[in-house]
Length: 197
Image (cartoon, rainbow, N blue to C red):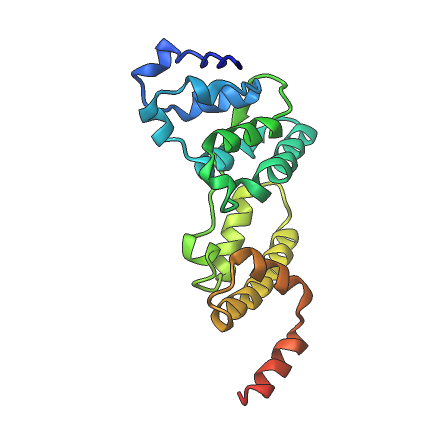
């Protein structure tokens, strides 16, 4: 008969506290895969992968380590963290976040502002001015020309995604993302002509 593995004991220091983002980030920096198991039920209810990933992906360090955190957070966690199946398993989400950390000790994490939720959900087109401000905050050392060109490309691409979301309202955001990469402006114009617009 298989024996049940004993649960990881809840850390008494954490039991009566709110979930502190800086404690969470320190646990990620040390790749503490068991940290989620140590949280109390009330702390688990406050576990927000979206907030954590926003904090985790940006650190103040040398350019190489900054790039690693940003790219590996996207590669190991962000791509799949909010998948409809994975989002039902917060412990798995925690482990994905841990996998993104290089385990190089405590880092100074900083908040990255996010694009408005209506823009992110393709409900409202992105405004060039807002996107420029967003990229200026994320890349303070980037040249004005680089920020301008990246912002213009984002707005143009976002416009196409908003169009697809409007034409195909039942399509998932991930599918719109993929479709927007293969469809061209010429395809959209032809589709509109075929519809009589």
